[in-house]
Length: 159
Image (tube, rainbow, N blue to C red; front, side, top):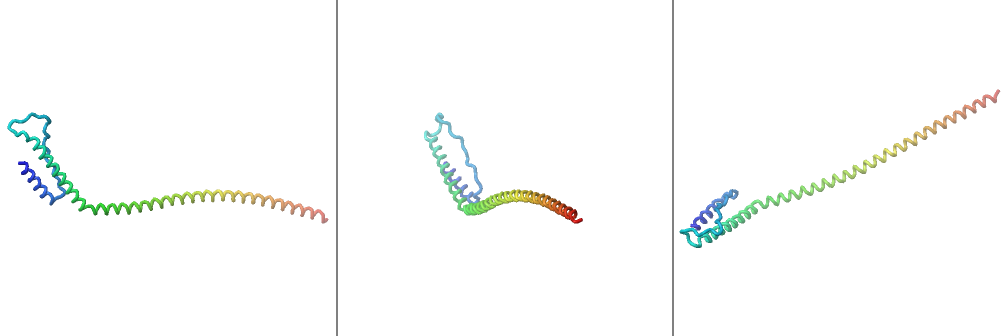
């Protein structure tokens, strides 16, 4: 009886290999209670045989699952490698972009410092020019006063 169930599950598995993405839930039977009294009409080793059959089913399902995973890996492993290569290329590009952004930020900071220095220089030069203009006005005023006083002095001497 157990062998017939095993054979049917193997036939189902072989027919399912044509459709590798379908997955059938394993039939879960109720686990036997521990220390249950012996049932009348059953052989004494029936429970251990039942447990062994379930263990065999689980081992068989594990082997089938491992084969299925190997098959998936062989089919789609190249896709994952291509994705890894694409991700690595995009990672390199992202590193370049971040380094370019960092250099732009540094350049922007240097330019901002240069602008501040230029504004300070401009204000200093503006103050110096204002001082020169005032000194020039004072010198002109003094020159005109001297010239005026000389002309008045010269006109007074010539009578």
